Image (tube, rainbow, N blue to C red; front, side, top):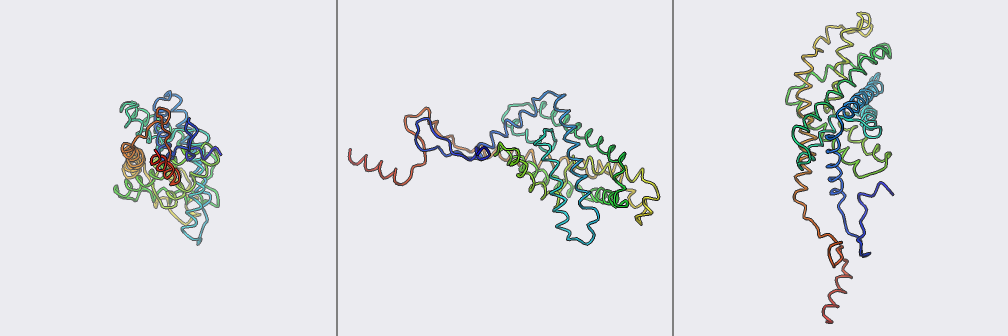
Length: 324
């Protein structure tokens, strides 16, 4: 099977027992290639794919809002689980269809640690991807508002969006930073798992649970917030008084949904947390562990085949030596 290639034992050129190869080791080297490819990609191509990725994550949040609207007295955890599974569509689209997402691009820290890319190249890559994600998210905000989706379910869809957006602004800096770390640890671990497979379907399945966990647990994703909070701000600003009156709320209840509040109380700490969670803890963490790997002899350059001998092989070898 193709999707088990990373775990499959490799046969030596001598035709003897297979050499045991670590799947973690294989995934790490693929992470190097993955990270470097993001940095050296043509800027216009990287930016275009980033716009798509921003739109994909926005679509996933639309899906989340739709499936969680009107949940009423349903079990809190189960509603959030369903929403998290729905949101996994975003990362699946990024991986399968192709996109440059800031939160996964921070894994290029592995290539940087290996000195395959410079600090300047790394930061330029992160910057253009972040800006591209923002453009894609804003395009989707415009389309969602033009489509009037906030009026779905007698306006409850829009009310759900307002409450989700407002909640994100009520974290302390430490909370927002920590939630950003936790979120991108899961995002990047999900991406890391996809390195173990060549099959698109398997990659998609592998991404579901990490995303479902971070969404259902309320972890913070900077690019998702680049769509969600501006959507809430826009609804609060342009919705008619009748919209709020029909829902039994007032526009003033959401007065704290402002650009300044969003940038300083959510976006900055969450973005920094995402960098630490994905780029430092996952990326550089695995890089540091990899430095302790003991290099095994190359079986093609050795007269003796290298394999994990069974007790029977060991006993035969011993008897052979004694007979001599």
